[in-house]
Image (tube, rainbow, N blue to C red):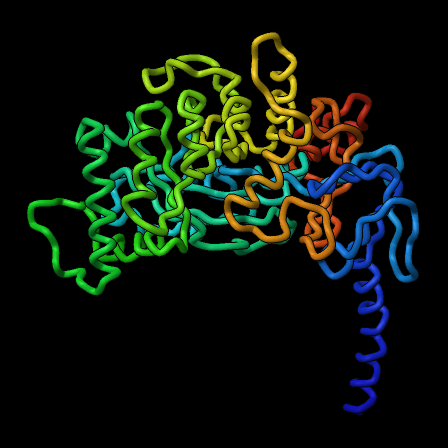
Length: 436
C-alpha cells in the first residue's frame, strides 16, 4: 500500500513539474528590446530560463520547450529600480503605528535594521509593481540623531516575504535637519558624524573601550559596531544633503576614511559642485523634480540639476527620498521622462532617453552592487517589463511583468475597486454595504 501511494504521488507530481519547467522557459518575441547594454533591438527575441536571461538576439527564433510571449509593437525592458524609497515600511506616513521609518525615541540609531519592519502586504507594493518597478532600495528616516539606521533592498515579486538584501547601506542626514538633530548647527552635525566614525574606527581596531572623554559620539556600542561596516566598505554610506557647501564638506569623508563608499541623496544644489562630485567618484540619488527654493538648503534648485550633474560625469539614479504621497516610486518612469523633456527646453539641461532610462534601472543597480540587475544580457536577472509603448511616456501602461522569470500578478486593491465601481456594473452583485 505504501509503495502504491508513493507511486501515485510521483505520477501526480510529474505534470506539475513539467508545467513549472515550461513556466520558467519564456521567449518574448517581436518587441523593441531595450538592453541597457547596447543599442535597442527591434523585433528581437529575449529568452528567459530559470530566472535569468539566456540570450537577447534579433529575429524571432524560439527553441523547443519555451513558452512564446508575443510583444510585437511593444517595448521590452529591464525592470525599474527605485533608487531610494519607503516601500513596505510605511503604510500611512502620517500614522505612527503604521510608519516604521523613524525611531525618534530609540537609544539605538546606526544599528537599527529597517528590514525587520518589512510588511509584504503593504498596499503600495502591488500598486508600484503595476508601474514596472521590480526592485526598490528602501531607506529609513532620521529619528533621535542624524543616524537613521540600515536600509535594505526589496524585490517586489508577488509573495515576497524577505528582503533581497538586508543591511544594504547606512543612512545619515546632514544639512538643516542634521544640524537640528545634532544640537542646532552644522558644526555640531559634523562633530557628531565624525566622532561617530572615529568611535567605530576604535571599535573596529578592537579598542571600543578606549573612548575619548572629550568627545561625545552619542553612540551605543551596537551603533559603533554597525558603523564598522561603513568603514570597511561593506556598506555604502548614504548621506542626505542639499546645499552646495554642505556637499563639499561631506565629500571630505572618503579622504578621511579610506574604504568609505559615499553616496549623496537629494543633492538639490549638486549642479553647483558637479565637477567636484565627479572628481570624487561619488554617485547621487535624487528625485530630480525639485525646481523651487523651498528652504535655505536649496535656493539654487533647478530641474536642470540632474542633467548638469550627468554632463559633468556624475552617476545619477532617480529615487523618492521623501514620504510625500505625491513622490511615489511608481512615478519614476514619468520623472525620468521629465528629464528627457528638460533637455528640449531652451537653456535647460536634461538627459537623453538612454541616460534617463539608465537612471531608473542600470544606475541604481551599479550604485548598490546589484549584479545582473538593470540590464538584459546573458546571465542577467530576468526582471522584465513589457510596456504598451515608450515606458517614459505618461500614457504608457505595463502589460506584462516578470520577476526572476516568473509572471507577476498586476492586480491591486485599486484595480479591484475600480472594477467594482465601473459605470454600468450590475449593482445587485455588490456586497450589501455598497448597494445604493
